[in-house]
Every structure is written in structure tokens, then in C-alpha cells.
Length: 179
Image 1 (spheres, rainbow, N blue to C red):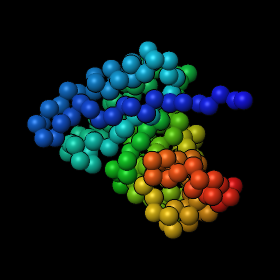
Image 2 (cartoon, rainbow, N blue to C red):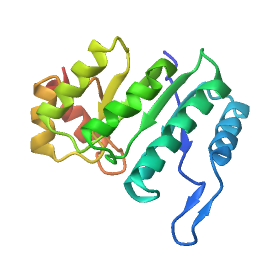
Image 3 (tube, rainbow, N blue to C red):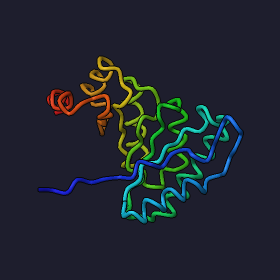
């Protein structure tokens, strides 16, 4: 048997409460990562996309960049850092996130924007041309027909379905297309 790599996916945008206007800054994100480190995790997936609904777009993008950099500093160079945009960016905003954090060795960028064949391929090309090894991940909120076209076109590096909605049986049936 082989070990299964795990990551801490509990790093959410908990510092903001739009209903009350509370903004605790980036420290709650660092505290959450520290909890994961204390539990033995060595890979972290961090939610970003504050400018989509929690903050003004420019300020949200700046906070996302600050959080990514602070987490990379906290975990060091030997641990994996993944970011999840929850489809909260335009393709150009996703490129800007990478321009500002590409030196942070982002392992994957999940759901940067609502996916399409052309945008996924263009974004993967952008990542490669910049010299980053960052993988493009998606699958949780995808529409089956559009998603199948993206997979067939080789528009993604990582396919990650939400098992609450996409059962193991459906995963197994989908594997031939992935191959």
C-alpha cells in the first residue's frame, strides 16, 4: 500500500464578516495554518477571492496576495501551498494573482475563474510561459458537458470533484475520459 498525500483544506476567509463589517486582517488565516502545522499537515489549500464578494476588488486582491505570501513564509519552502479561487476571479485577475505570487511556489491554483476550454488552455499556457510549475485544478462546480470538453482538450492538470456530489462510482466511470 502507498500513503495518500493529504492537505489541510480548512484555511477559509474567516477574518471577514460582511454582515457586521468585521475585518480581523490576515492573522486568522495564519492561525488556521499554524493549527494545521501543529496537527502534522505539510500541505495547505487556502481559499482566496476576497474581492469577489467580501471586499472591494482591488483591496481583496491585495489581501489575497498578502495572505499567500504570509502563509508561504510561515510554512517555509518545503511544504505545498495550494490556492482555491472558488471561481471568484476573472482570467486577468487570476493572472495578476500569479504575477504577484508566482515566486511563492504555488502547487496548484484551483477554480481561479468560471472555466471554459479556451480560458483554461490560455491560463495553463500563461503559467508555463512564465516558468511556473503551478498546476491548474478544477472540477467541483463544473457542468458535465463543458467540463468533458475541457478535459478532452487537456485544459486541466488536476481534476478534483467534490465527493459529496460526485460519488466514487461516478469517478470510476469518468476515469477513462481522464486517461
